[in-house]
Image (tube, rainbow over all chains, first blue to last red):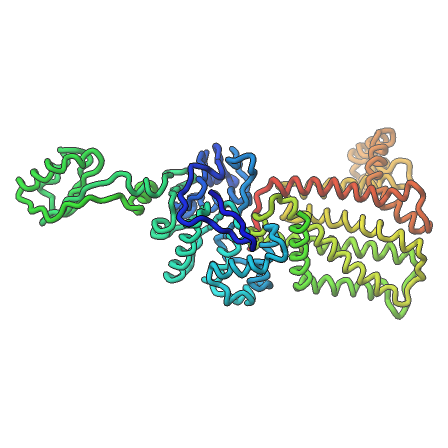
Amino acid sequence: MMGVINSSGIASFPANHSPSDLHVIEFNQVSKKYYSLTALRDLNLTIPQGEVIGLLGPNGAGKTTFIKLIAGIIMPTKGEIRATDSEAGWPSIGYKSERLVFPDNLVASQYLEMIAGLCSIKRAQRDNVVLESLARVNLLAAANKQIKSLSKGMRQRLGLAQAIIGDPDLVLLDEPSSGLDPEGQDEMQTYIEELRLAGKTIVMSTHQLPEVTRSCTYLIILKDGLVLYQNPMAEALTLRPHVAVLVDRPLDSAKELLSMVHPDIVVDGLEVVLRDEAIGMRRQVLSILINQGFDVVKVEQRRVTLAEIYAEAVQ
Amino acid sequence: MIQRILILAGYFSKSVFFSLTGLLLLILSIIYWAIFFPPGQGTPDIENYIILIGAQGAAATFLVSLAVCSKAARTENYPVLVRLPSRVEYLIAVLLSSLFLGLLLQLLVAGLALIRGPEMVITRVLSIPPMWISVNLLAAILALHATDLVTVGWSRVILFGLLAIALVLNSASSSSSGSWFSDQLNAVSDILDRVDLMWFADVAADAAEWAYDSPLSTIASAAGMVFWPFRAMVDAVFAGNFTPSQSLAPAILMLYGAILFLIAATLFAGKDLDFLE
């Protein structure tokens, strides 16, 4: 479900909307090469509508290339990127670049007014749209300040404000929290969460795992131009539950015995971790531990963390 | 679409006009005026006025266009570009802005040159805009092809290489001699003869003989036709009136411009944009 533009040209959305099964953009066998360097290889994926997609991956994984391809700044070397809804045409896009560069000779409100004009917002409505977008990112006080005088945090917020002005169908944020202090990062995540609650489709690249956990509803992990992992966040984090059994002393003496029970049982220091099929062998493992003279301190059911998913994918 | 193009054109124009480049171009224009139309001496006749200011307008538009393209090819414009339904709108805005600023500088010099300037007759004044605007348009579009904003791979080298070849052929076709190529080769043969490279001199002489009867002169004449609109306009200016065929010259220049712009738009629409910070 997409937002609508109200009379003042600002997007309004139903709160707490749930993402649909619709998609905005589809990648078909897309590859991108820069001379001899292959930045993306045979990508086949869709951008689900109404989701906040977190793009994770090490430096050089192809995240910025992925975002630039969607933005139409660069063209695929092979394959095609197309709007899923061919009748609606290519979605309107708001883009916040990784680099915080703006036309420094303008004041913040002038810049946003220009962007609003490019979004075909009528002249009479532009002032309201600009003020409301500045208010949304808590930048009203800087409305009449020269952009060159703004701090890095303010520039990040200005970047977000310009990306959401005119209610684009798709918002692309390239490392939105990069270079911000913890307070600034928190603010940025709050803004993104607000957009998520408003049902916007957002693609954001980041290196901040907590940011992804907090704001994103869909996860894509890239490495060396390949998609290693893609799943809804809720599914990703509920997948592969595991059980950890904590004992009172190092498990070296029982390590061999436990690993013979099932290959999915991993012994690590004071902890036995039972994954996948081994989860059903809890009783058996507990009785082995007790028979071996270990005191069981805690038995805990855990979910896989984003850090674990990421580490596993990129390794 | 028009609103978006005008907003962008205004933005580019302001950015370049109020920049150091804008100031330099303004100073250059004034220097041009001071050299070619010194107020103490008075402005030459109207023919020179039209030709010299036409040339200044083309040069100014070319330089302004380079400056606007450089401004347009900066990273800060990615968010702006992404908002447009078509990249061609962006290129049109660049072109409009270049034409506007180029015309501004041209009108400045044209205005200053009227100080103790030639007597303006209404019929001559009315013939000026089509000539100046068509030449400016062509200069602006050629400048687009010269910049990184539009060029793709060897496109710049190919276009300007072809232009250079056409210029050489044009000078060949305008030669009074029966066979320009033959004359040139004979000259080369003479030089080689003088430095005792007899074998090479003979080869050049044979080539000259061949060139005299070859279709090269016809090709040169055909290539020279490319520049006919310029010759026609200059002839018309000095004659004081346009013949029916000469009056087509500005329109043909506009046609060249349209073709070159089409090529520029196609290149720009399909290229990877690698803007600079």
